[in-house]
Image 1 (cartoon, rainbow, N blue to C red):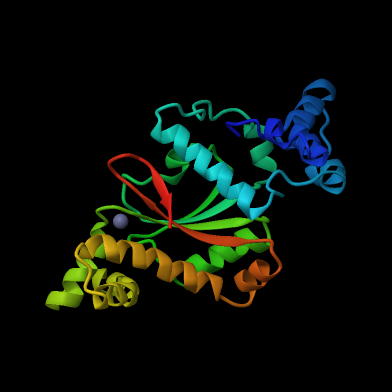
Image 2 (tube, helix red, strand yellow; image 1 turned 90 degrees about the horizontal axis):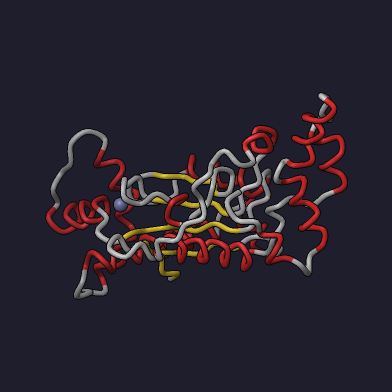
Length: 247
Ligand SMILES: [Zn+2]
């Protein structure tokens, strides 16, 4: 954990208390002092609140504040050894990400988050297939994530290739054709509107399309959204500035 969120959560004493344990200090120091550590579930799980037990809006704020630090060149996350002992026991990611495989878009860096904070599904073209959906369902139902962001990015090669397939009917080698078929529905919607900037329009529509897919995904995701425990949002990462715009 690179940021001590307890300072932002003074009005939530349960959360602040949890951070003492969540950061591993309780467990680690007990082990250090006594040479004997209780299993994490024995004392902490029943008496404390998970560190990711925050509202969807709070989670989004935390993401965007991290992106502002990253884009501004003032990241906090440089010491990844902190809290390693606690992370070995459990994980409490506060956001799930559906991100492109593009090497220039690294969610943990872009949102200035340490290990254990983000639950990331990455595939070229940042779409949700059944395996990605199952991964996110696990994160929501079993890890308690309050937020999912579908993150597209400017100049996406996968979306660009899909436009060429749709417009020029080109065929792609290997398994690329299958990949592109997942991006096609969104690109077709975008091109119907005859946008001036086809690539950017398709990138945005691909994000929105996959947000809708997730929001209506039953049984798990749609249920958690209905109960107010989860939000799904879209964002576009600008390669040139490092800034994420929520769309
Ligand atoms: Zn991409």
